[in-house]
Image (cartoon, rainbow, N blue to C red; front, side, top):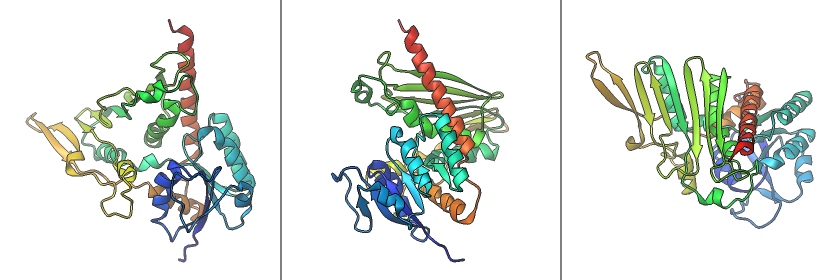
Length: 349
């Protein structure tokens, strides 16, 4: 079969485009061709590429008949307008997370895409994190027995970030900017929870930046906790799994981001790979009741799988990897979390 590459245009030329998208698209030249990047200002923080046309004329980019799909990597508050413009121009759309501010906006735009016969998807690359994939493999192995509790952490020690923001904005809220990673991982595997308990805070006081969250999602007897803080000098393990027969602790996160920050790119054979010291530890009891600990080799993460799946859907009619109802559910949870935060401000001493 002859593959027909999709021609891409990007809206945004910052860290997201240059660190989390282009390096992976570059590994798939038989599937994608990057033609254009829309930039608001010609003050480039990232080097210009000679094979890409950079333009401040968004209308011209959207009118280009060669462009099949538009990728949006700008801040949250611009997503709705850019998605709608691209869809009305007849382009498929992949949009960075957090996808939109509200589930109502998402329903409208998913409806518009369907009416126009176009594909609209949220970029959920964290489904291809090594720590997540390894944890799922351990669950599927059955070695934990009945799964009882999962804790997922995404911690930093960056107090200067919330301290440097005097007022709350949705764009900078920790819940929207980071729970959009971990919540999608939960939803993708476990589905819709029976209920959610919210602990979303602004640790520096009312109306300040949201810098902490702890969400508990219940699935029958299973509790899945998604927790993050900007004030964790010592990070908690990335994944902690507890079952009736054992536990699995994965201390370190997926290494793709670390390599990308060091400009160590996906064309390297060991890109993103865990070393043995990064492997998670499976603990269980043997037949004599003795504790046995075993290092579990990590699965390989690969954000490029987002684009491989996207191509299969748009060009070949394969099922969507990220379903609209999954994105809508995530937004409903994020909205409820921010509502609980704002309600706490009203009763703060």
